[in-house]
Image 1 (cartoon, rainbow, N blue to C red):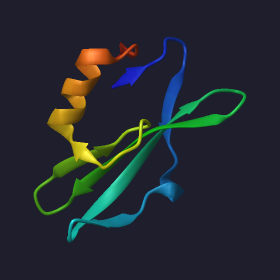
Image 2: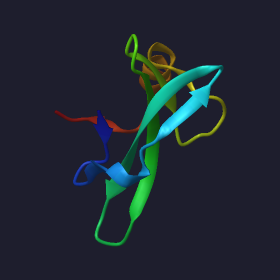
Image 3: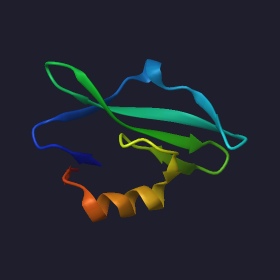
Image 4: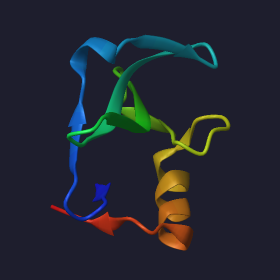
Length: 84
């Protein structure tokens, strides 16, 4: 995962739901940055239950992309720091 140093990433379970994407059913998991001032949406991950295929809808907009495409994009131009 990536985060701005000093910030906490969280999910809000009540916002997660099933979505139909290209005729396939995916569960969504939305990540937010949790600061004292507000929650900021980062990314939404869509996971297909039957085979664990993952799509990512990032904050830049556009259509959801594969996890591999999203990771490559993050490596190319991300200012976020990796954390564990």
